Length: 81
Image: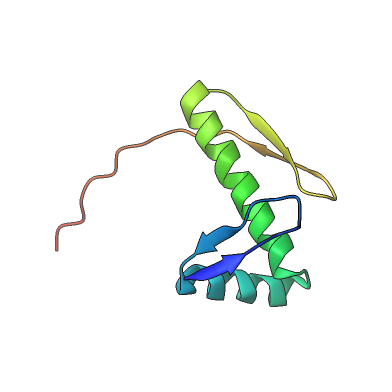
């Protein structure tokens, strides 16, 4: 497990080593601090959950622009070899 604290005013977030590696990889590719990437991923996750729960579009500011999220559930058939 990896503990990440985005700032003094925000609670610590505990993620698995795999998630921490993914966040660090994205941060390196985007040229942003890992804390910023994690914060954006959490914000998008919350927006998707809110959109699914309430059935409407949500907007998430990401620092430079606003991301609009409209999520829906679909049923996928299992892949049978």
